[in-house]
Amino acid sequence: MTPTLAVDATGVTKNFGPVRAVDEITVQVAAGEVYGVLGPNGAGKTTFLRMLFGLIRPDCGSIRVFDKSWDQAGVGVLDGVAGFIESPRFYPYLTGRANLEGLALLDGGTRAGLIKEVLDIVDLTDRADRKVGGYSYGMRQRLGVAASLLREPKLLVLDEPANGLDPAGIRDMRALVKRLAASGLTVLLSSHDMGEVEEICDNVTILNRGSVAFHGTIAQLRTMAPDPGYLLATTDDRRALALAEHHHGVDVSLDPDAALVVTGRRSEVSAFVAALMRADVELLGFTETQTPLEALFFMLTDDTRPTSAHRSNQAQEALR
Image 1 (cartoon, rainbow, N blue to C red):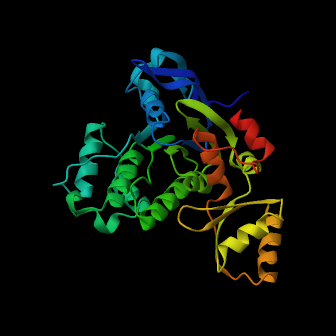
Image 2 (image 1 turned 120 degrees about the horizontal axis):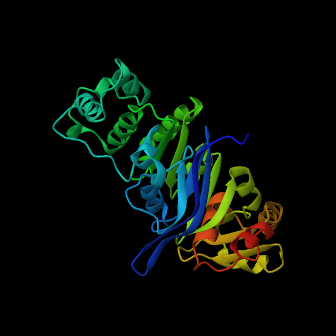
Image 3 (image 1 turned 90 degrees about the horizontal axis):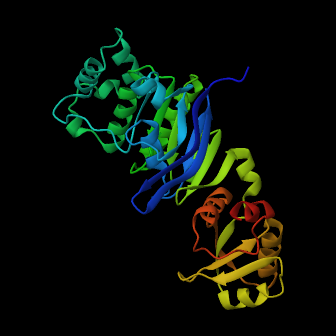
């Protein structure tokens, strides 16, 4: 017997006037997994999540949540589902605890002790009795997760939960999602950050201008990733460029910020760097411009980027 999918969206399309925001996308989320919907701003991520929550209706296609559709079950589709679209909002003059108590009452009440539990889960127990108006943005995001957990959901939907957070807030949010996933909760999140998705998701759909650019596992995505580029600082960039002409396995160009950009297989790049050392060209800096998955993400979603001679065959096939 085929297990019931947490989310089964098939051929979903949404138009806003002449603009096609979502174009026949299919997303299937298995129960118990962490699934990422990835794409740049305007790719259709939030539109898709709004349709999932019933805030807008698709023009065609179907969306089923734990085998229930909006046409058949109405708002009952959201039984066992919680989350937020964009940023959660609270009464700033109330404490975090009071906000959660009010939300619990609006949702029909909750079992004793649950508010304390969810505050513990999101690490807000020691700030629960402070007014939300004094919370940082990251604290409000975590309070939004706590509010969602009051429903004791089977599926948690988060729209760019780390967006706008500082590095510490991003770290805390990623750790929180990992803890929730480890508990067996199904998590569907959107993001424009490949690093976030790579770190916490099992499977991913990458959207570009409302269409699917990639479906699959993070492991499959890694096999498609190109070799990374490197920023190279030397004591003699002109000579380094001349030496590069004799190393056909690498491509070296001058960055607008006056650094050299080197692309190619790691072995070829290493050989080129060794040649610089032998030629007494000193190396002052050597850093990756992007991780391989970040480079692949931009290849899949940025139509203005030129084709690189060093893209993998799998990546070029994905782009086609």
